[in-house]
Length: 186
DNA sequence: GGCGAGATTCTCT
DNA sequence: GAGAATCTCGCCC
Image 1: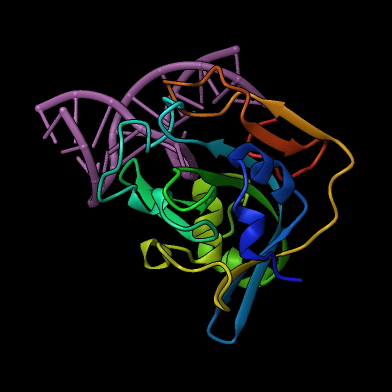
Image 2: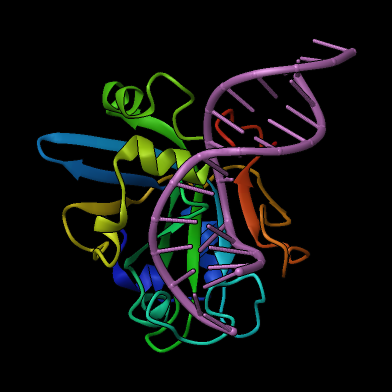
């Protein structure tokens, strides 16, 4: 029940919404770390001033312009990694930021990675919990190391402003499961 | 439990 | 050389 490439090859905001309830899996050696996606944000291209792709293609963001269904991992604030999935047809920029997960498998490893602190309720935290770094940048999500499984759609999806950006903050492109305990911001 | 600041490195101008 | 799609800790309620 792995999500196929065509799932990602759609409008970015639709993909962001449909990813809620699906299960992100990262295989690390013999371990399997996974969690249900409960919060996402959509980032588009030239029409979205909050997006890395707004000012056109650069070496860093070129993966957002490439094929859908790939991991885009970048480093921010000197401390943290963020995990995105590329969307839209090849040649059109788009990515979905994964902001929060509900842990399912590999809790022990996550706790170790996070030194006992809260595990996956924020984009920088969940990458650390799952052991995702720039090594995973450009990984194909149709492969066997990092992928997403089909899940049940949440009963209620809420849509609000995106978090932590200055430009384009007024766009309502953040999606989350109402009432979930693992959201980054309530 | 909330607010404010510091951390620390990469990318583009 | 600035600013960034964030987190944590310390201080003060």
